[in-house]
Structure formats: C-alpha cells, structure tokens
Amino acid sequence: MDLLTTLVDKGLRREPPTREEALAVLATSDDMLLDVVAAAGRVRRAWFGRRVKLNYLVNLKSGLCPEDCSYCSQRLGSKAEILKYTWLKPEEATAAAKAGVAGGAKRVCLVASGRGPTDRDVDRVSRTIEAIKEGNEGVEVCACLGLLSDGQAARLREAGADAYNHNLNTSEATYGAITTTHTYADRVDTVRQAQAAGLSACSGLIAGMGETDEDLVDVVFGLRDLDPDSVPVNFLIPFEGTPLGGRWQLTPQRCLRILAMTRFVFPDVEVRLAGGREIHLRTLQPLALNLANSIFLGDYLTSEGQAGKDDLAMIADAGFEVEGTDTRTLPAHRAGGAEPAAAASE
Image (cartoon, rainbow, N blue to C red; front, side, top):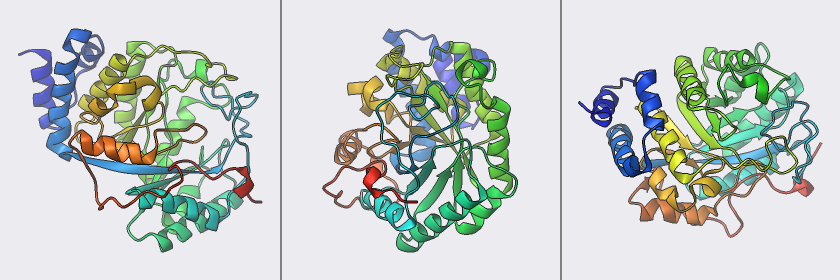
C-alpha cells in the first residue's frame, strides 16, 4: 500500500500517521503535489464536508509588548511600522466584531499584545466578551491574551468565552532560538490551564521561521499531545524591523504540503488557514481549502489580509460553503483587525 493510500485509510479511522509518514508528506515532490492535496482533501471532506468556518480577529491592544518573539511585529524593540494603541472599550470591540459577524464569521477572536493579562485586564476582556455575546446571538468568542495566571481561564469562561488561543508556534527544540522571554513549557501550561477551565483549546504553529521538516513534525505532534479543538497554521509574515524580517523561505507548494501533513495528523480536528496565507500561497489559496476547513476573514493583527468579500468569493468559487450561517453583505469597510488607534481608549 502506498503512502497516500495508507494516510487516507488512517485519516478515515481518525488515526494519525507515524512521524516517518508525516516527514514523508513534507518530502514529496512537486510532481506529487496534487495527489497529496487530493488525498488530504478526502480526509478533510470525510469529517467536515465542504464547510468552511469563518473566524474574525479583533485586536484589542496593539504593540508595546515586553516579549521578544522574533516573528512578531509587536515585540520588544520592534521597528516595524504598525499601529500601537492601548485597550479598546467593550463597545468599540463589539462594533468591530459586528463587521466580521456580518460577513458570516462564526467565531470572534479577541487578541491583546503582552506577556499575559493582569487581573484588571481579565475584567476588561470579560466585559467585552459579555457585550459581544449580548449583541451577537450564537457567536463563539475566543480570547488570546498571552500566558495565563491561576484562575484567569475560569474567569474568562464565566464571562462567556468559548475558547482560548495560545500557539506553540515551533518545536520545543528550537523554541529558545525564537523567543527567550518565556518558554515552550510556559505555552503548554497555558493551553492546559484553558482546557482545565472548560475552554476549547486553540493552538497552532508558524511555518517559515527557518525550521526543518523535523521541527515541523515535532510541533504538530506536540500539538496533538495537547488535543486542541482548533489548529491554526500560520505562515511567517516577515515584517521589516523584526529579527525575521526579509526571511522568505516558503513556496506555495511547501505551504500546501505543510497543511496536508497537519490535516493527516489532525484528521477530524479544525485546521485553520491563518496568517500569511495570501502572501505565501498566493494564487494557490483555493487549493488550500481542500486541506483546511477554517480561515480568518479579512485582516490580521497588524497586517492586511485579503478583502473579506474576496474571501467569500474564493470559498464559493472553489465549491465550498460558509459554515453555520447564510452569508450576508459584508460592510463597505474592510473586514479584519481592530479600528485605528484613534478608536483606542484607557
């Protein structure tokens, strides 16, 4: 039995590949690419049909972060030209969230820069969660606030949060080369705190930071050990003014192989096509919908994404459908991250 047949059979049984099989997916040739996509696509369709879940980012606080994550435009010492502002008020965040919900988003992701929230920050975000839930029936809310302290996950859950995002980003072996102000173990601990509080865990990776195939397999299997409900796959956006600025190591073909490998490891788990998809997949973005069953709609934290209307058109043109809602008319302004700094408060 050949590799792809084996991987499809395993995926249909909810069984992950071996590490050797996962590495073999990343090592396939460009001549095999469409076969790899088709095989992983069979697994994706078996568990998710042709549905695509839409997620929408609201950037509650931008820049001014004390951590030194090499990939991040908001890091300590970053010279990247991004908006910097402190916390949005709950009503401002709710107004921003409505743009994504109007475009069909099922989940709103509330993100704030920083090492982790203070108790006052958790109170502030809790008020925002409550306001969004009150004004948008049925919407899921995911918080992404950094490293959590004892009891904070439970407080977010009590406020109505459905999920918590905290990515592992890269393998444990290479983590210290990317970030020195916290550890891989710190990130694992936060994911486990969120799960213990009853929050759905969202945790993923960033590809394109100089990692090897072995590193990619390590982080994906490390994620599987955590049993997340959602796995965002980000591709490095190499911001000028950061240590990884100008690093362009990904091709559209490699991105598709990474997504296929992730799908085989997580056959029945949400795999989300996340940051950097537009600049690295380029014209092959529609093919990636055969691998990922979830995307971000519109913009990201500090960078523009594809216009929300174009996302919706891409999904329809590729023969997929938005999950859980009838797509309405997207507002005239771009879908995506938070409003400019003028909307910031406190």
